[in-house]
Structures are given as structure tokens and as C-alpha cells.
Image 1 (cartoon, rainbow, N blue to C red):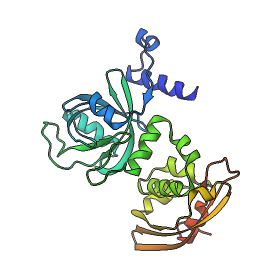
Image 2 (spheres, rainbow, N blue to C red; image 1 turned 135 degrees about the vertical axis):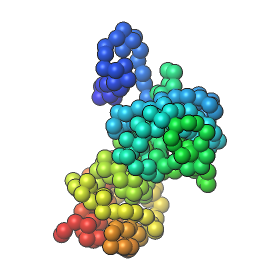
Image 3 (cartoon, one colour; image 1 turned 90 degrees about the vertical axis):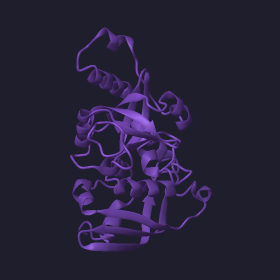
Image 4 (cartoon, rainbow, N blue to C red; image 1 turned 60 degrees about the vertical axis):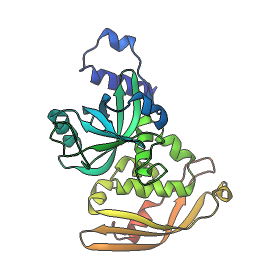
Length: 274
């Protein structure tokens, strides 16, 4: 019911807030097709709309290149301006959950906001940016970038399902990836306690999970608590810091999702007072 309401709200927004016959006649559903399929839906030179999940802002782009993902450019100067507003007026590598809208397709995707490489359109955008879909990869790897994957799942409404079934190590990777991306909603979903992330995240200029000790996930199916040895590098205005210790995870039953003891980790790193 909630998902249907979101879909109707987005449709209402795109129609300019006016109820029309089309609103009643057309039912849009956000899908998450594999990149191989999307590659044919939006081939090179296709123009389509990007809808940012968090702000509700939308702008038009054109796919110009890309084989492992889509290299795109804003279509006009106005579209570039809207995109920059989505990023708070400053270009960034931060990933954002988006919906790609083309004809009758509403496709879950992820974009970053940093111009790079070449550009061909007269749009005041110095280069192109990348849009990733489920199964697409970066130029340097043969696997999905986790930060893009999380945004795609978020756009598709499948993030809760993914985290509910994830093993503790995938949860840890998602946790630190979300902190790196400054994504408060995702970190909050994984955190055991309520934390004022809006205050903490601006202090973290960069964070990197440098080491993670594994046990076979299949040996942990009945565990409800776990201490995982990790090394984490993080930076703030005072410089580089290294945390070497245990990350505590708990769940209330073997069927529940793993949660991370954020308060302990943040206290150990003096990011909150004990």
C-alpha cells in the first residue's frame, strides 16, 4: 500500500500537480532491470528524464557513451542548473538514488554528480557524469560498485529487503559505505541506536574500511550477537585517525536483520561523548 502511494505521488508530481485522466488511466511501477536490458532500453543518444528521489527535482539528459554503465550529459543549461541544485550547488562524487524515466519505463538507478571526461552538448556542464543500473560496473572493475548498488536498491524500494537478508559482513560494508556517502537514512536503518548523524557526518571528511576479519557466514546463521575485528581509517579537520578494534553487531532473533552498535563505535572514536 505504501509503495503504491509513493508511485501515485510521483506521478502526481510529474503531471504538475494537476489531476488528469492520465493519472487514473496510467499506473507506473518502478522496476530494477539488469544493465544488459537497460542498455537496449536507453541506447546511445537516447534522451530521458532523471528524477532525484530525495528532492523530487527532475531534469533531462542524453546518453552519450558508456559500455558498463551510461555516460550521460544534462540536455540544456537549465538541466545542468537543476542538477547542481540537487547537489546543493557543488559538484560531488556522492551517489544519489534516482529514477530514470523513458517512455513507459521507470527504472531504479544511481548517479554521481561530478563532471569528468569529455562533453559535447552546449549545456554549461564540463564533461559527463555516470548513471549506474543494477548489474552495471565501473570502468575499472567487473563488479557492482556497492555505493551505487545501495542507491539503486533504495530507488527500487528494495533496500529494507536487502538489509534484512544480508549477512553481517555485507551489513558492515553497507554501513561504512553509507557513512562515506553521507547517507543518513541508510546508516540509520542499520544502526542499533538513534544517532544524530546530521551533526556527526559533516565532521567526517572521509572514511574507509581498511580491514575486516571474516568467519564463514554460513556458520553464523543462528548467532544473535557478533564482534567483528576491523580497521577503519577516517579523516576530519584534525587529520587522519585509525580505529582498530571490534565492531559489535546484534539482532533479536536469527530471522531478524543485523544491527550495528553505532554508539560504541562512535564513542571509541570520540565522535560522541561517552
